[in-house]
Image 1 (cartoon, rainbow, N blue to C red):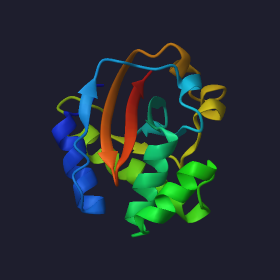
Image 2 (image 1 turned 180 degrees about the vertical axis):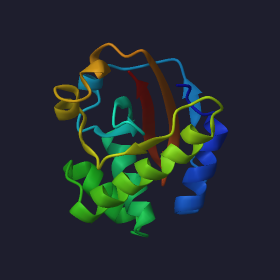
Image 3 (image 1 turned 45 degrees about the vertical axis):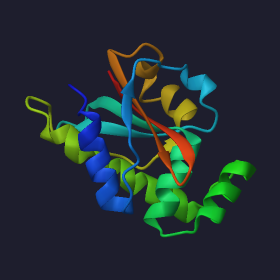
Image 4 (image 1 turned 90 degrees about the horizontal axis):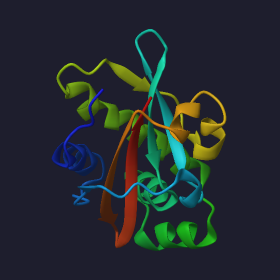
Length: 157
């Protein structure tokens, strides 16, 4: 499975939140344990086999979820500072991950995938997505949403 170009990720995010986050692909892949509070959505193929994870660092989850819910920037900053996201923000971040499957599914020869609701990346890594510890491939995108530096990772089995 191949990851989409950063431009395709930017396009779907801009459709969702009305702002181009300027995501760029980066070669740096920090350890998942270093991305405190990261949330991840398990991606399943049509036979329900886990094939990838879409990981949002905590600022990305809060910023994307909050912006999808049209919350003001102050609420985004407050949740990030407190290290605690509102439940509705987490549900919206889960929907963002679901929409990120669109550009993944559009990559030629990729299997059709769908996501499960987001959960703690560390919990997912100790369960169905143990492959996250030694992935087959990983692509990271960094950008800015409402002045907040964010990271999205697509981690493949």
